[in-house]
Image (cartoon, rainbow, N blue to C red; front, side, top):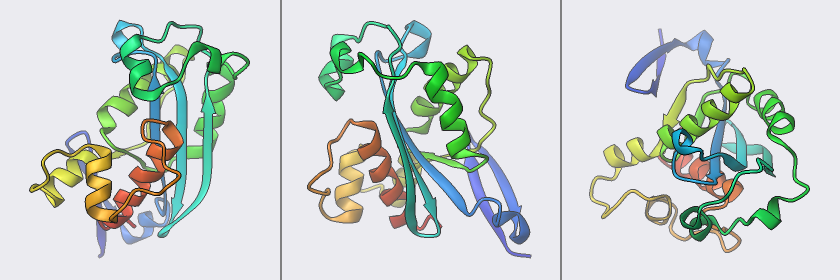
Length: 191
């Protein structure tokens, strides 16, 4: 019996060959937030998601989200998203059901998954929704795959595995970071 391992939060799930067909679609995700932690009032203000089937990126979901929260100066310095940019954007109750439909039951891939998954789970909980999907952390994978790197930030790992960053890549914007996470995951052998 052929098996594939999915590592999530320190747990290992062993999938039979038959069950692998269910997970042939993976979703790379990234969020940009109004603050550093959901527990201190931070909210997701941008979501980016890229569907991967086989070794191809086949679909994308991306939107800014109007949460009505103040964006901390530190967060703004990272991603450059201002309150003005959020005016007229969809509210969380419009975005998150669409996100859940997009991801289905696919495993989620994120660079620093505990951060992204924590914020996503928090946003969904505010709407009375859950997130049962397993997650794969490309930071953890990169630490095992590339221990020689000076750090395991998204750009560092991407440059090491992919050579150059794409010319149109804007680091710390959700869709571009999700695309990079997808490419990193595939470069490390993700199927």
